[in-house]
Image (cartoon, rainbow, N blue to C red; front, side, top):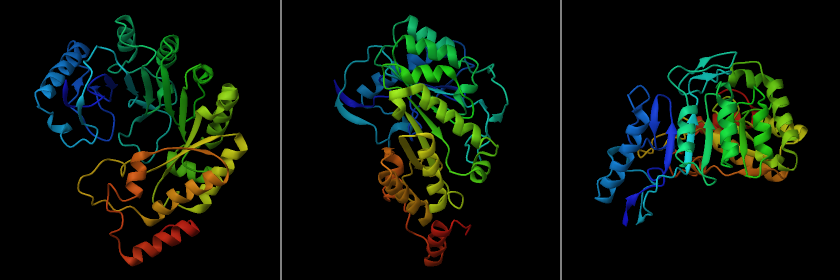
Length: 342
């Protein structure tokens, strides 16, 4: 049947901060159902069917109406299979990044949340045969490896031969990730380092773990062997922090030293949110750093992971990045070249 819908409604589930969602893209998606509700998971799946039926009748959820992922086409009937699962650990982290959107509590040890437990949901989906080899599972932060149940969930998914991606800060080495990287599927880990120096790392992450992260990346590369390109090292660009040539050069020096093959870049996640007003100012130094990063990746033959939304921002397709004064632009240009604060 032809109607307006999206892939997330038709087979995606997010275990988010405090409840179930369908959409973890830049759009909000339908309202979530709290984990605290009785039979929350079953309610969430019942709501999925209601939303699909409404969309077939042209009724679009209010928070979905402007989403660019909506598509009018002849959609396959929902068969109950889940093609994408996103497991968010917003509860625990072993860093204290200044850019964290939820300011997760800081813990030194692995913890289990009383109100957040992905394991029984994954077990239920497997028992109901809704998870298949075609299911993609993404672990996101806080820090996934800080979840007590993380190794057990990972083992279940590896047994099902799902494709897996872990977004991590790399502070804690997790042996099961080494196993994941050696698996037949193109499983990946993306580690946000965001800099190339110990000083910048402490400023961004607010913990003194730069050396530990470097060692973790090297261990994963060794674990992966011929699959070492599956380890991606990311650089998120922040105004007046790491948006300069010197820090980017140090980042690539680090990557060359420890054997990284794949890199990724992004702009500050706050600016990554979709906006229809186009009123966000992006510093010239951020734009220049974003492009300089790509130049350096090509120069040193690194594989550069695509970042479509960041590309859209830098190319002025999402925000109006150019409405800044001449003096502000000049200061920003000098910062990019000299690495000094405006």
